[in-house]
Image 1 (cartoon, helix red, strand yellow):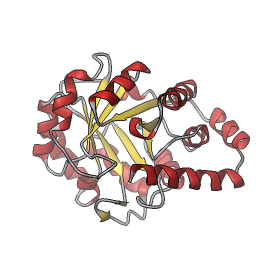
Image 2 (tube, rainbow, N blue to C red):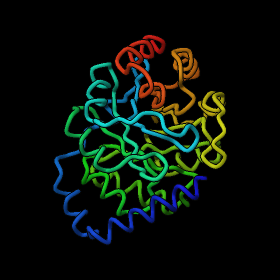
Image 3 (cartoon, helix red, strand yellow):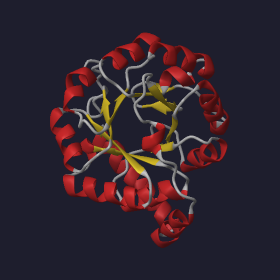
Image 4 (cartoon, rainbow, N blue to C red):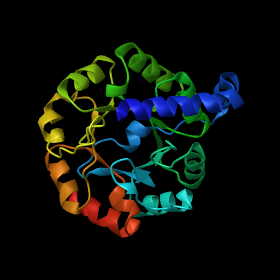
Length: 258
């Protein structure tokens, strides 16, 4: 599944590049105002921080919400106390777009994460050109030289990489490139099976100077409390927020992680 998603995202990026060449996207990326300091926004505090996600669908759950106005939803997330906004831009299975990210960027003052299956420099430049402050890099989808090269480009553009892992070996790879924002995804993107205990088992292996992000398997306040107790600095939440009242849900989730 991960290989298919990554290949599909690459094919879509190449189609966009045929219309908008790399040189044009790179110029737009470098002309953007400076990216927001995501590490400051997500820095550990006595309370958990939440990255709230704009997410219409997923391969595992199908359609979740129509979200006709991503900017409005993101504004509600900001009002509810989110520390950053994640925007799915993968179009085939998650029904997202870069236009969603651009509209969210214009609507909020929080750092914005481009969540997609990024494997090329073109996609990184696209992210900055659209206003992203954070770019997801999935260790399992990239060999080490590509992972490091993309992270360095992300940093050169003033953004932050959220380096996503699923195992001890992947955490070591994240540490080897000096990742400062490290996620552990409870969902295995090869099988899409969930293991909520994975974060707790891997927490001690996350570099001490990195911000620890727990991803997936969050549907109730108890799930946030579970991750916080296991040592999560940040929890990324999507489905539970798009299928209910986002402000009220964020409030209860933040209280659970205090």
